[in-house]
Image: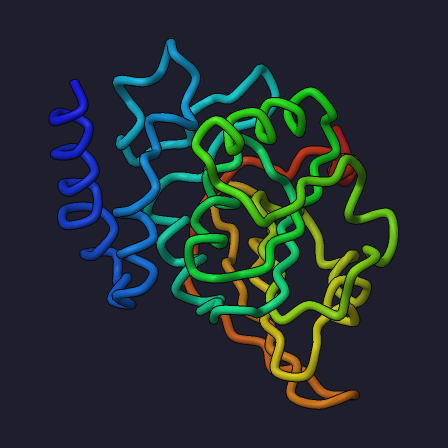
Length: 221
């Protein structure tokens, strides 16, 4: 079975992630090094390397591998950089960011998921990161400023962006997916100096909403 997963991981990178314009070797190496099957619920283990949002529980889904690859490539985390992850989920992206050398602080609003991710990473002997219970969108997170911020779920509006980008260090990068289905925009925001930010639209996608985010009310006629 381990050989099957290793082959599936290789195929994921070569046939799904790389063709989706993920050409950064460090990002690809991180995804090759972290065994995604350890982060997938047992019932879905056979689909660990499929390019779709695998359910973690009734409300939370993992990001598809192609989106993970683009996220890692866009943030381009360097060894020693301070990284804020919003939405630990299974801990898979946490492990990838850590593999890149990031000093990762991961915030998870669901305490049950946070505890499970801590246990999973400890069992895999992945050390030197912190998973903290709490709502990262409630205000500035202690421990900043951050060189990179990864938002592991979509946000229907840009309302939280000013608060998030103010937590970036100079040169810091924020990856976030904004908008409504079916066309959400993956966005990279880079802090150029104390007062200015560069915003780059990376690609369109459709991923689950970040846990804890309030979706705007819809008018019904």
